[in-house]
Length: 457
Image 1 (tube, rainbow, N blue to C red):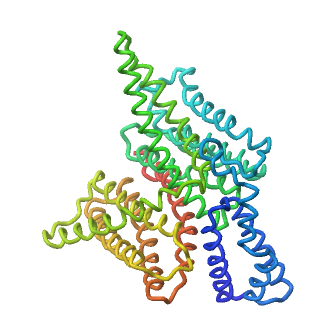
Image 2 (cartoon, helix red, strand yellow):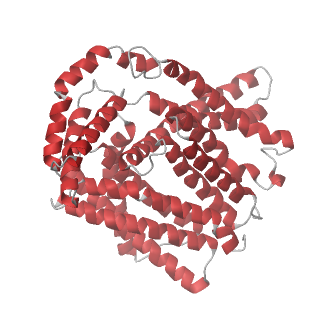
Image 3 (cartoon, rainbow, N blue to C red):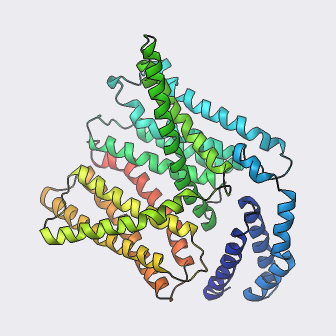
């Protein structure tokens, strides 16, 4: 199959998928299963010698009328929507034994995550003791994400080979965090504490996709999950803050000091458990309510576009360069990451078959403005390195901004082509999902190579 015919086929499937998504009776796993069946039948027909267009039409016809399928699903699963609002989102009218185990299993993983966080105290490693070399700070990503990866490995029924890969990568992260002789005031340990959770989060993505990491569709699913998980986790954290305040206040009212319990048990253990609970909520409530990340994207894209334009105008007006101190660089990098997040979640919720609109042009303006700011930041970092030489922080900042520059540059080009009607929207989605490998590679490079490269300083 040629590249053009493949692009045409993907566009037709995207139109079919968009039509499916408008049928609210169909649950997301059901829709994904139907799409898998459609793709399998197309593959069989093209292997038999049919053109992709012919194979698509015949496959759709053989699957039957979509309206009939929708009505059938609605009849069979009419009680599912209401059950999902308070239960775990069964995929069938009669829950299987595995479905019945999902809630207690999630609770078991959440409790396990909370307990595992306190196990080092049995060996004299105190959470509040600075003399242990920041053990908890170095290993925070491992404590938070290893139970989440294990939960998804159970939920997706991943193969032993995938489990081996997950264990090996988490073990590699543990070695990098604990074997290197990094002092607590060194730059490399700070970089490790920042980049190891990023690297391990993408390892969680391998478990989330059930080992199908090469699938663009499954990678985009993980991107969607990441945004929804973050929102749920923040909501859980806000609720936990209220619980903490009430706990301290009520115990204080009867003359008891609960601050030690709250600081050493409730908050850290609750945070570890919250990582798993937030993931379960995302999984359980899929397709019940509108995904929140794309909705927030619609709200904040115009605001961030205006903010970046005003920032560029201020830089030009005042002729002030960008400060390259570490805190300032972190702020600018976070700003660029937010821009990419807005781009990703707008892509994840967009109908690929829809024509370019005003919002697409607004996103193009946002990406181009972020690209200009990234170039200014890179110029400032390069000047600083030229004057004072390389350090771990400056090198990491340089690499991260180059990674962002490559993504933003090609994203701007693809968006421009799409807005002008010369490129399909699917090209943008494929670019973003495949670029996840670059983020993972860079995070592991910082974690594994930077400490010895900069003498653990």
